[in-house]
Length: 259
Image (cartoon, rainbow, N blue to C red):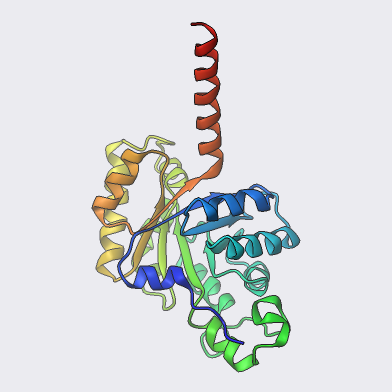
């Protein structure tokens, strides 16, 4: 038996732009739809979603079965949450609101085995195929393949950006636009010059440090802007897609009835 390489890591390393969705719905069906629909990855959101580890376990399996890479967003740099997400087979961890070097270090150490980190070892977890993979092989895989996405989402994180970017093991710096705009005092004003300037500064500094940048978008125009700036990983939130599609469909049906 062999462990699969992380296709998302390989794509990013080859300079490809990757696209994924964030969902907090406790639904295997939505995860599978995202996979079959062509998403490169899905972020299973246990920060805002009402998801327990049993549900995350099933959603990770659904992602793998439908051909998309499962990433779990935890509530913070919590070693227990990160360990559990990796134990059930996540191929990446998304840590929100990383504002200091110490928080970045704690998150990465929680995801890696010695000598790179402090993750607790159990040889019979799902991610190690219930013990059929030799522990040494699984430990090497864990220290090489799962992606660490750390999110800068406030002014404190921007102020500490150089220190965060210097932490070994950071794979993707993810910019949370909604929280960042709120921290700047201009919530959801994504066209505001201060917001655009701050985003541009973060992207430029991360790329200069050799770190891949990701962010979330809600419109094609936002996607085009940040792709042009060099963002390599883009997400959208499933809730927004459903809401917009529902309203558009309802309006078109109602209009048809008035003809």
